[in-house]
Amino acid sequence: MSAPERIPPRSLTPARLPPPPGAEASRLLPPVELLALGELTVRGRVREASNAVLYCTVEYEGHSAPCVYKPVAGERPLWDFPDGTLAQREVAAYEISEATGWGLVPPTVLRDGPYGQGMCQLWVEVETATGGPDGADGGPDGDGSEETGGAELLALVEGDEPGPGWKAVGYAEVGEGRTALLVHADDVRLRRLAVLDAVINNGDRKGGHLLPAAGGRLYAIDHGVTFNADDKLRTLLWGWAGEPLPEDVLEVLRGLAGRLADGGPLSARLAELITGAEIEALRARVAALLRTGRHPEPSGQWPAIPWPPV
Image (cartoon, rainbow, N blue to C red):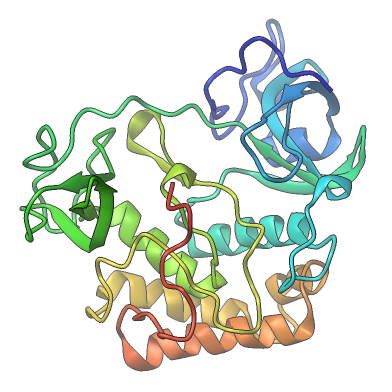
């Protein structure tokens, strides 16, 4: 399938879609319903992706939105994940994100499409970055309790210190024998995402998966390699490693632990998407975060940072 001449920036339809002209307000349609029930029309392919990622529009009863469709048939086999399960894991990540109340993953459903069953997710428009840390064109100035809006979330800086409002990840080679310090913003949204990644055991949190959107929202995409029963956490968001978790995060984790109990609707939904062993491992990770009260640190048994990192 040929790609269009230009695939537009990722754009997220508002939390509830406006009715068509002349329709009553009572016909407002939740995005997940639009994604699940609407007709998918493939417009092109995102060629940079390792698996088949199709840019589509979805239409239902006068409502429409851009979206991404990842058919199971287009998944590349991985040695450490069962074949044909990445779409379900993407949906499970959305379910956990919603259970936290943080809304970090765009609306995502599992459905049939033109190329069989797959994951369908609303397309997110990225807000242009406005700067970086000192030494890299300015940046946020905060302690992780504030959102940095559309500011740069990741950067490379000279020297050994990240600067105010930034957290150090590690050193990266930048060519000709030179290294630079990789940093990420000390941003409440990123901190929540770091916790979410620890909960879902994300094995591939790259910089290109962070999507700052209009209105100060942050979304994260590409959650196919998640929920493995073994420790697979690989991320660029290690800046808080070993630090105490904020009380509001602990409160969210306590609520999530309750929702993950046997017999609850969240556990029943996850049982449709991942294995029983993976659900037990998910519960154990939440329990460990509550027990230690701290952000996890790299285990040393698995590469801590994904490659390539963007």
